[in-house]
Image 1: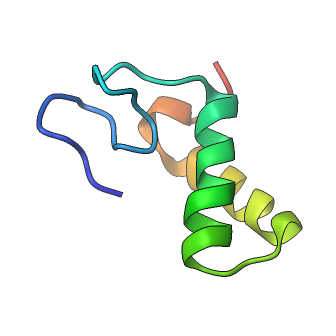
Image 2: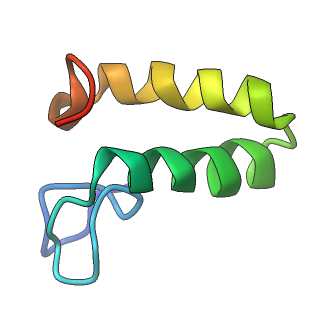
Image 3: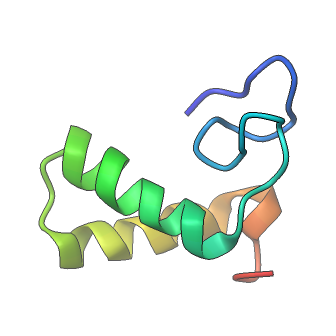
Length: 65
């Protein structure tokens, strides 16, 4: 995941204006596009991987906001 030049958030975590998306939307994007789409994981495994990934990101440390 890369950070865009106009945002402090990565393209998965931000909208086209660079604003942070909701935790639920970011989680859905990670599950469906990153872990299931790119990595071929099953949904259950992808959901766990997405929660783990989000827990390490500065914007989401400590869970949903």
